[in-house]
Length: 81
Image (cartoon, rainbow, N blue to C red):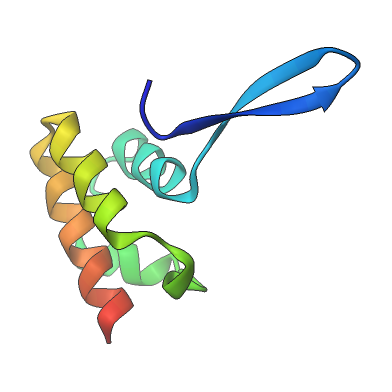
């Protein structure tokens, strides 16, 4: 599993938590047309400087999904503006 980290919830319980990069790609994957620049701009993503853009691109490339690759490229463009 890529894009997750295990966190301790206490009481002997653990959970997998998606990284911000993985969570964003999951949102894009699940919504039709979410790879469009207009859709991504509408999200009004904040604190893009906190995203690991290299990791975002790596996860998108590793998915093998053209939609995620396109979206990651748009997010990188938004983050570098």
